[in-house]
Image (cartoon, rainbow, N blue to C red; front, side, top):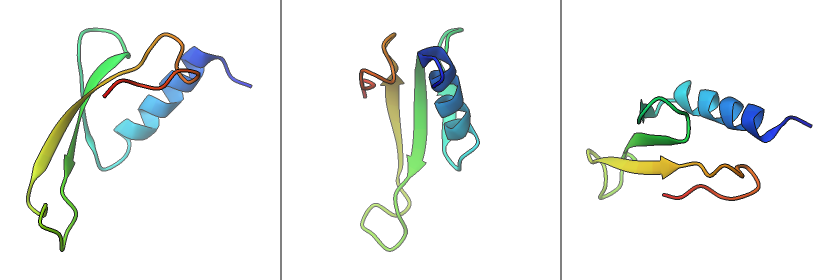
Length: 66
């Protein structure tokens, strides 16, 4: 089983390689913004949302704050 810090790095890399735009805050890997688009064929189509994500020190055993 991997350590929590390795899991954090792996999950963040997967997110950065996805279609989402990830904007890092500060120098660490614990706070970042994720930009995502509304789904096609929905009232949200064309919209862009920006959420702030904070990963706790105990991640993945403790959930992120959004």
